[in-house]
Image (cartoon, rainbow, N blue to C red):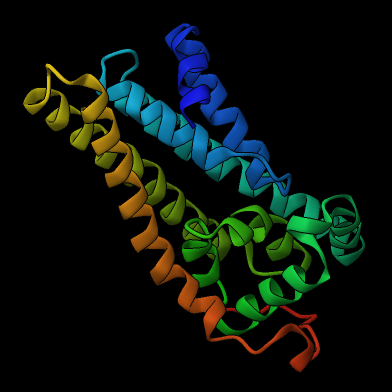
Length: 219
């Protein structure tokens, strides 16, 4: 993550915002990319004044919402064959076992899987295409998608921004310590959110315990 942050420093602010939105958007379409790393690194840059936190958060939220919507449209048109092709292309991230767990989450929790999926790497990538393939109603999907994207983007950005600014104020003579504290706080908050979100997956049976759901519905 530190290498990513050092690279981002060399870019003009507008390029950072576009990169944040682009990487998160493509990730949300179903392509495994380090969207969370880019967001965390950019939020830490905002704490040092290199970029503005509101624009980092806005770019991240826009990328998440638009990317998921495009992924939904692609998944609705391509259906399960598309998900199977993605699984063959990215077997470690989107293989059959991961797809079954994601389908089970949708079958059990409906659009709430979209909201909480923003905080889980697997569902963050698959939420859009899978919701489309399972014919989840788009209005409900969009509501959950927008809510999850906004909470994730603005919550992550401003948490790291606030902690980073506080660390810089109290540890201005030890800049590396302030950065380390901000990173630790970001990791702790991410761990807490993931722990809550992973309850969705933990409640599901093993992939081979039941057949995957083929029809989406929401609760």
